[in-house]
Image 1 (tube, rainbow, N blue to C red):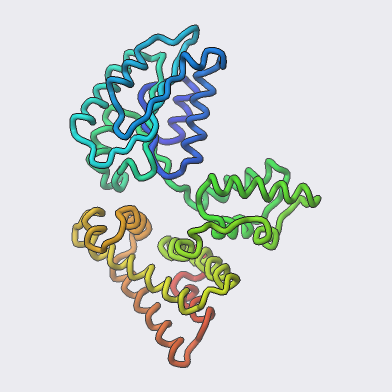
Image 2 (cartoon, rainbow, N blue to C red; image 1 turned 120 degrees about the vertical axis):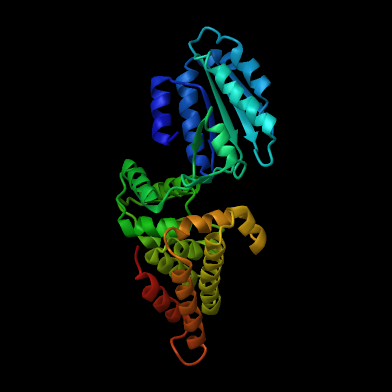
Length: 346
């Protein structure tokens, strides 16, 4: 089920058993809030029509028992299960959940929502290679995945948020904000609130990148992941913004170049093993890196072949060697490399 389909289901009050999974907790909280507002219309009756359970493996019987009791003086009731982690889940538990969905179909007045922990539900690589877990549960449950939004989606979302506050921001500002603050919608929403308050307090109707640097807090993972993430996606502009930020932080240029080499080395290794037919789990075990990083790399590789990535890695190593042998040095060497490979833009 897509997020648009979920919105339609909430609007039309077409409930059932939903499973929310993914890392974008902002969207999970948003849609859960919409469900609560739609179902729990009378606050005085909410304690009777809103049941919250929790545990690592959802208990199908406990969920059905909570759902089977008719709503009190209301058309609907909501049952939530928090903290689900399907890592290593047994087959009989999956079967029980599928049976729960079939039984719950006879209870149209009840909505059941199972919320998986971040990393607690492996959907595989959709749509090409869904996991066994996803294929089994998706036959009966409405699974909604909330992955990190793409930069294009985040850009339009941020522009709308600033416009709602009466503040004008150029596209370059939004791109810099994403590069600096990360891709978490929760973190970005907090920074929008801070920037909006700053602008209103200072009588500003527009914001500059100087304001961005003054007001916002850079993502703790920025130094480690922003540059590699941009290289993974082939986004030259974001990569140059990440280099510029590291330059402001006075990160040594040889460390920045090392980050570029490391990113392409990881992508190449993952691509080679994937082309050899290895699964994400097997690649992670072979390279001694977390499976999440492998899936992130596989998603980023897309249509690029191992041969293309091998060329990128060779260019990065040549640039590093040249910088130590009288060629372009410092940040200029990194910036020229990125511009030559990615053109400084998407």
